[in-house]
Length: 216
Image 1 (tube, rainbow, N blue to C red):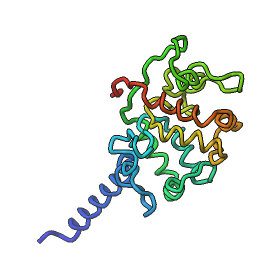
Image 2 (image 1 turned 90 degrees about the horizontal axis):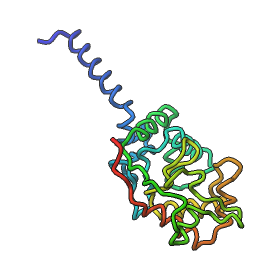
Image 3 (image 1 turned 120 degrees about the vertical axis):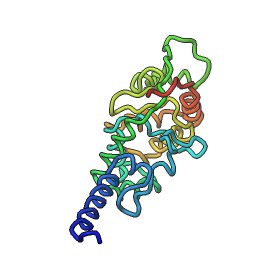
């Protein structure tokens, strides 16, 4: 017969292991948070965090942890509107946000191709991305989001290889005032100066840039 103390000790060890596993950042991405509303990120953003383009769910893998954390907090506070993400973000604890965004930032992601701003432009989307439309106070996208739309730091996320449906949706959200979570409403001013055709064109340009191999 197993002594009672040994049985209790074994149970406590298993409980401790389970607690550690539940707190692992990767598990929040795959299994969700501790609250019922905090569903698993992978359900919409894919097992690899690379997004689901046909549905317009963006890539999260490889994005800055600081940027992702800010977006989740903004969903909670209402400065970024989404009927899906707002209740989900509200159900995550601050520790869970920190954990899952750290895990996402470390996941393999494609690197944007090198794109020269001096190349001959062949489409409206490419022209806006590389040249802008300064006569309407629209700077070129790569001036803030980096060469090839690769993203810069925690303030300017990658545009390259994000779903066109997602990029267009965000530009339209800024145009309509449904998204207000960037400094001085920079993107709101830019998006409002763009036509619907330009929004679609620039979104398709960045979505179709050929990615380089995922960084391991």
